[in-house]
Length: 421
Image 1 (cartoon, rainbow, N blue to C red):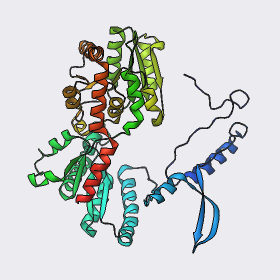
Image 2: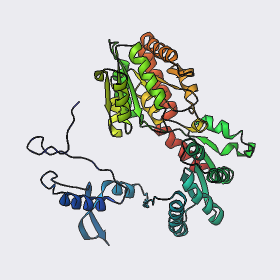
Image 3: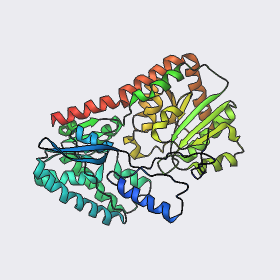
Image 4: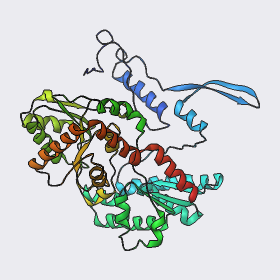
């Protein structure tokens, strides 16, 4: 692995491009601020150019060319090509309720005019905050309302301490009830969550037809190469395990560390690739504290388009998420990516539909007791699955990924919902 210092000069390293992600519609402002920052830090000799990826646009009016040389980002051209109008709003942050109210009011004023002018018939709301607007316009203007819930939002934030006020929690649970009762369709990431909601006192049999299951999804074609290589991978003396995610409140850092420690000493030939966007310092501290060999670990942070490459030449994927109530509605994207790459998975219980998917299809191991001994049993069980029929195992993983995490099938499911409302 090569690490490049972005402050290396052209003479020692040569100029290289770096990508800066921005909010949509804010590219020019970011470019301007970057140039000002470069000048104020006197770094003109280190940073040669700042560019916004654009394409030339020629404008015609009444068959005559009236303007040229205007440049627009490529994604804007694609949106126009597919007749998609995208209006990004800067999201104000600050005090939870005050900033949220300001954001909702700002969006509501725009949406009211847009709905009238464009004749909008349906509003698809992703998660809870935007669904407040969906519910409002359904009640006031008669638009159809799709509640794409993405999870048990209020419960997740209560469990992680993001909502500590019991009054605020009850407020969002009341809103959740209204979303479910008033919406024209409800989309859940897991079948487990739908089963749970059907037990709630206010959900009646007549609401059953509104529930739809569409999991998080992946562009599975991107992982075909990794699955092919992994399925043909010859058993070596080294066992490669990979973790993808973060080390934060949504993940069980203690379980992750205990699993790594158990496998490290139980399988001296194991190697761990840990792809984390945050929390790498905690992993480094853990490795040093346990006197583990640094050479048996690769810790890195990668952009999403590089994940498919990191999954090549791996044997087992693993992750651990706290099995709280809210996680009945959770569908980790990393699971779809790992399965699409042909990797069996070791993880904990009661996360969305994971228990059923792994156990019924024999493509991994569900850890329930989270003890050193069970972690050893988990790794031994999955290694046996690999040694018995690696190619067959890889095919089963790919089949489950296609059935459950396919982006193409998700598109078809959304299209059917739109057509039937």
